[in-house]
Amino acid sequence: MPKANLEAYREVARKAGEVWMEHGALSYVECAGDDTPVGELTSFPRAVLAKDDEVVVFSWITYESKAARDEINAKVMADPRLKQDAASMPFDGKRMIYGGFTSIVEM
Image: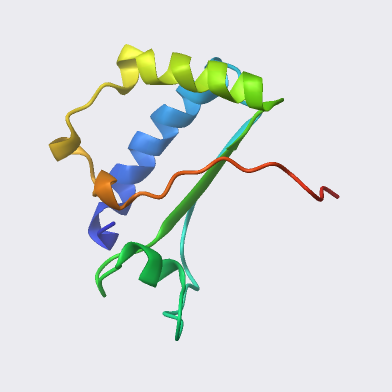
C-alpha cells in the first residue's frame, strides 16, 4: 500500500481489529514492513508487486479453532461497521493475500 496511506490504514485496521476481537478473535495484529528487501526469487515485495513508494503490510488473527475462525469471520464479514466502498480504502484489496494456517509449533 502507498506509504503515504499508512496512517489512514492504521485507523481502518484499528477499527477492524476491534470488530474481530468483539466477535471472538483471540488476537489481531497488523505490521508494516520496515525490513522487507526485494529477493532474487521471491519476497514480500515481489509477492504483492510493491512499488518503491509502497510498504508491505502483514497481519494475522488468531482463533481458538478452525470452527471458531469460520464462525467469527462470517460475523465480521456481515458486520455493518466494516462495510466500506473498495475505492475509499487506503490500499488495493486486489493485491491482498489470504490464507488459513494451522499452528505446528508454539513456544
